[in-house]
Structures are given as structure tokens and as C-alpha cells.
Image (cartoon, rainbow, N blue to C red; front, top):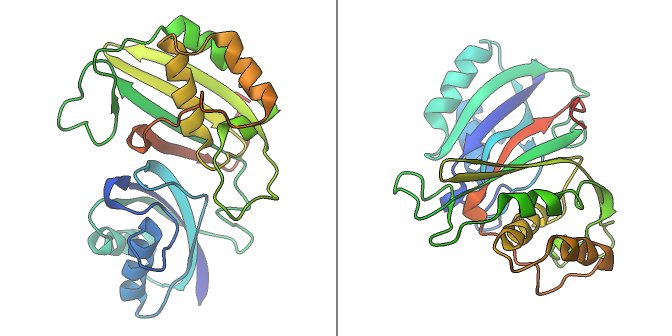
Length: 253
């Protein structure tokens, strides 16, 4: 009997062409569907909670698929761990009702952007942005971040995919928390949904505020213009991680 399954997975996005399937392969979704096809001996279609760009990582990406399996979730999870490509790890798996949809049922997401003052150690270099000789002013960044929280038109902080001209740029950002621990800097962003490169654009702009390239109040004016400007530079993909997909609106909203 065919059942619907919900899986939470993590991946190192460095060597993948993003989450979404590509005609030439090489995406995270390609690797997962190839592995599931071998497990079930037939093609399996997955639906993800959202797209991540090439080079972006995930700790809590969610996808669902339909399959006939009678051996319990633990045995399927073990088969997935053995079969998934290097760099992709299934973290949790459970059967769900047919109305669950990884994308449509999602209420929001949490992204983390990580940077390190100085140079990153080799073992962390794939996952953080090295700030080298720059040391951002945390207070300025926190002040500027307040202008981005709330429901706004984020046209100034997105990039065009080339096929989404009619998509509304209005999004709700619930929370932005910027913290420093030792040399490590973390920008945590939660919201109901994000535009293409929106989180990386916000992270890049906030880092530039911290470096003195943009004034905190200027960031508010950039947002209000609702038009992309050369002042906004997207932070490199490797520092970004999809941390969690919410299926209930968090109390921090």
C-alpha cells in the first residue's frame, strides 16, 4: 500500500547545483531521487519545502514522497543512509497523512548565515564566510536589521530568476537576530517565505552596514525604494544554511 513519507535531511551544498532537479543532474534532489529509485526499484518523485541555491547548505530541509513500504521507518531510514550520495544525510523520517505537502504545508523557514572574523579553519571553510581583516560593528548591524523585520516589499533585496516577473515581492520577516561568539558571527533570519537570494542579499547588506559601507538608516531607504541597487551585494552562498522549516508558526513571530 502506498503511503506518504516526510523526511528531514541535511546536505553540504558545496558540490551540488542547488536543491531543485536540473536537466543535466547534479542537484540535491537529483541525488535523492536516484537513490530512492534504487531502493524502491521504480521512479520516485520528491517535493521539497523550498529551493536552495548552488553552494547553499541545509540542516533541516524537508521533502515528501509517496512509496509502498511495509518494513517500518527505521529500516527505510537505514536504506536511505546507505544509498544517498556523499554530502546528503537523511536525519529523520516518518509516515504522514496524504494531505501533508512539504511545500504547501510549510508556514515558514529559518536561515542562518555564518561568518568568521579572520580566516576560517580548513574544516569550516566550506560553511562560513571568512571576513579576513574586517570586524563588523554588531550594534550597527542590529540597528539596521530592525528596519527589515515585518511585512515589506523586498524588491530591493532579491534577484530575478528570469521567469518570475509576476511574483509578488511582499514577504514577512518575523525575526532577525545577529550574535557574536568569539570570532564567529551569526545572522539568524526567520520568516514566512523568501525571494530568490533574499536572505543572502540581506546578509550582505547587514555585513556592509557593520563595515561602515552603508549607514543603518540608509538600509531603510534602500528597502523603501523597492528597487535593487548596486549598494546591495549578495553574501557568498557558502555561509548560508537552511536551518529549519516550520509547519506551525513559531511563537517568536
